[in-house]
Image 1 (tube, rainbow, N blue to C red):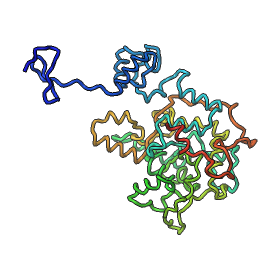
Image 2: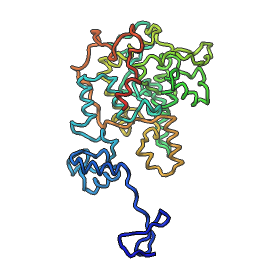
Image 3: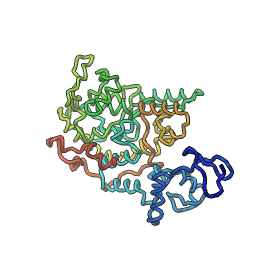
Image 4: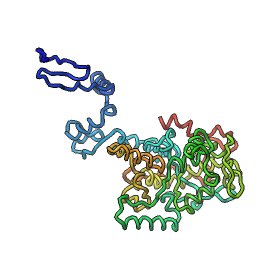
Length: 426
């Protein structure tokens, strides 16, 4: 049937159309709710910047064609690189950039080191809701054996924040570099790497540290086939864990989670889980704390938080940020800093979207979930240090825990990541 009216097509079976020439055509694609909303915003609020609502693919096409100015720079001659909303914080160089304003507030001492790191984690895609992308915090102290609280004005009690965990011990680093050199010397499909494990992953870090809390205890058991892991592999001692991650283990390079500086509950077996007995006959229950903590989890958290806010950490934290979120995270600078991990650790959502083979993509996603991945890179040059005038004087004892309170207060008074979640992970 050929219609007489050129403007009308005939619908067949509700799926296809026949035009006036008798040719079958496909129906027009329905507009999404997003497209309708963007159209309404453009019509009724012409001065509103609706760039975050626009489709990234369309923006790239318009930008490449020269019909739209760079969303990151008003200069039309700027380098036309691909752009997506997730790169907002990474490619703006003007002083209105939210990341720049955040960094400036930290440098002036308006926000604490703890809060600054939480915000960087959130911007880079880390979330308390996702064990596979859990927020990352640094080991700061290195003294977990003394009987008295470490002197926080003495640099010898701190970890070298300019080096990754795998590079803290020279002898262990030498072995990692030998492996890296051997991988570089052979024609291998997999890019060479120094560390086969990662500083943050689901089973080896997040569920390992938080095995005594819910819901992580249940997730840990699911990962281990319905029961807890072998007792001697569970997190049982702070000093032992530090030694393993910094010196003795041939693979472990774990960093910490926010709970180490804010929530003492992960150190106690409050739910009386049956964690088993070690080979030396000791029952695994609460985490063994350093002697200077006097078996008081609240005191341990306070000292850890004070060390994070200390003068030494404030002056050197930018070096650690360079390794985790900055220009030493990948590429030649990462190699110079001995900070090269397995290549799949650097995959992000944009890289995964380019994989057309569904089976291969699933395998890579499972590998990343098991072995960990790096956060999104936020800084592409050296992160500036905190301004000296904003540092507190730890030697004079003026440093107090930023969350408020001391070890004599009840544990509920300490700000936990769950409470901070609404502010930093919205």
